[in-house]
Length: 261
Image (cartoon, rainbow, N blue to C red; front, side):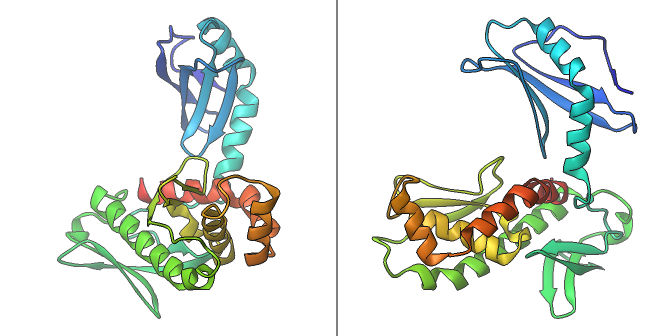
């Protein structure tokens, strides 16, 4: 069902091992040592698979562990990619996810590569469109999509922030968006808030909960009972949103990665 491109290669401190799955697709497994690792661990997320081993563990043992868990690895990878957003194909992809919904996508040639939104849907203008139809998204298209998603996310945050300003000791000093591997948001000691860009693909109530969560860290810098009382006062349904991320979070992150590279 599975086969390694090479039979159990000698592994360096950080090495990528390509695996061919039974459907012919290739999954890259990143193998590396971690000084705090206590056992060999295999994990999967939207970026691929990761094989972590302790400093003193033998590479042969790690590879044996990988082979012993190949069935589990494929099942997890398939689950992650089931119903996930397909990679964008220029002139072919007909819809885009946004705010928990699917929106019609139209393609047009343009002097610049950019994304526009109207009541009719979303339009992606591409410079030199005629010669790119059927090809995977170029770097310019991916950059235009990232800019579009960030602009939409900032519109949402600007709409929600005034509701929660009262009762905060101070505002966030800055809010920026980036792709985060596991977290949905963070707040630095200086008040700089980072939010995962894939939040704009989620249902709005879930995105709003993450914003509330990080704003409440301006009051309490931990996850104490006092912190959760502040969250509850502003977002009584926060448990529903947490459950939503547990079931949909990996799909959302994978979807953004497939669209934006």
